[in-house]
Image: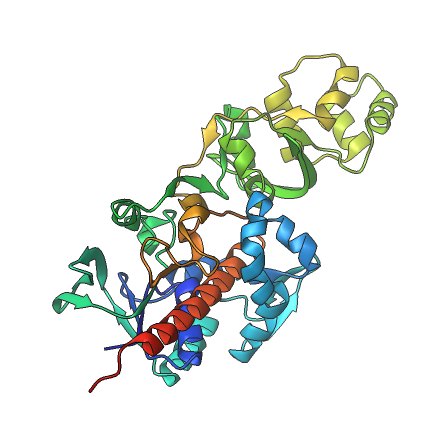
Length: 400
């Protein structure tokens, strides 16, 4: 039987498994899905964003109030470590103009394939279609293709994901198992999700259009970036960055002229002859694209005096009707609370059981922050589990 068991074969679980193996332990990884890393592969379909190349103190700000909790793990394995890690797996990386780091192939499959091969070389055993059922008489219980199996390792790492994209394996079913053990959990909520908008018919032709170089404001947050108009509402990295504000139903203000002041917008509009239609005035004076003009018309509701449009252009009230459900969210907020864990992510009420990845109660925007933290917490949990194992081994009475 393996020294350590890792439940979950996503990035956090695989990182924990490799860390354990590098510490001299025999390791078995089990996963409920037919293959490993399904959510990672899905992320790679649109270009695998590994991390963000920026100063560490700026990087950690992306984790908001959870940054202090994540700091030790990210100090041990942070944004400057991800690139060399990927290159050691045979995946050359490059940094885009925004600072986002990608493998040159832009895909997850070559990296995952090489990673699984390296784990196999370290004698890490992977079992799939193993469905964790909790504990029975102190043993971990699984339903498997070979029937019910039990395991009693000295160290266990849980890396079962959150509750977003359940068809990829992260369905949050583990939450009840841990809650029944008295573990404190924050409820799951969608993160990095779209804002729903009940569009009028004139917006249909703009579905799929992107708005770039615009600024959003909500609460105390202001961000510049881009998003996409979809049939369901608004999606994209700029929208995802406002997940906490959207969940709180805070007003969302859109600046369609980020590079101009209110006075400049007003002046430019005033110089367009009155005989021009509003659309022509917006196009000629401000070079607004048709999708941007359509959004302005959708949310500002004409007719209004032309002088009033400058204010809408700089602070357009985006009327949204809710947020996308957790099944469509890229990630989740909520999970195992910090109060239930020690500094190495061991459950204090379940000695020898460590947790990593999206199971933990943290969130971050897209842009490489999610994957980096999953790898970092997996490594931290692996180091903690290895140290726990070696301590237990030393304290065991010697056999006669």
